[in-house]
Length: 248
Image 1 (cartoon, helix red, strand yellow):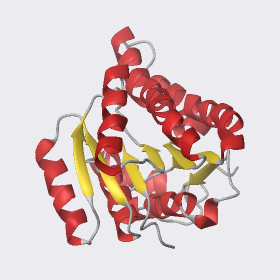
Image 2 (image 1 turned 180 degrees about the vertical axis):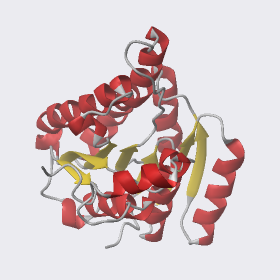
Image 3 (image 1 turned 180 degrees about the horizontal axis):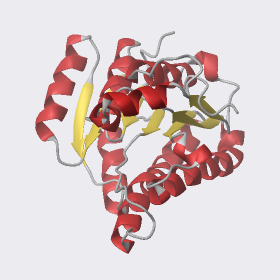
């Protein structure tokens, strides 16, 4: 699989998952636009790692939950590379709490970043992709958007919204050879999962048929597949990378 002529934007690229997705795309030869909101140091480090792989990279600070941020990000990519072939909507936050305790701001912040941000980035990138009559858009959802999760009404709603957004935009852009898909990671051994006690981890693990937690590399491999030639005839789909957690 060779993406050496491709340019990819990865939003929220400095987190564990975004970083691995960026590196995986770079290993296949893609130039990567590393989006970040506040972690300038991590973004610079990631750009260096991508350069060490022999690929080009550009770090762009932008708040994708705003129209200005999304448009600035895409413009920076076009100004530097002249094209955008792949958009990975990975930026996301969580404000977990039970629904009775959830503040309106907790809801708004999560929906703005996790769902509205994807909408704004798709809108910003659609015109150049349509002009090129080619493109791959990959939204990073969650099994929380498929099955729900207690204490995550806002997060689950945002990720479920990504599934609907994926299907609608896939229908709109398919005639221009632009595919739109969603990846729903399950229990990935990074981030919040690392904060659980051993008892909590073991309880969670018993629900997974493959009997292991996922790795960021597992999700990144799915992104590379959908971005590459193997994913050419796949659109409007949600792929659960979850070890079988949500198949029941």
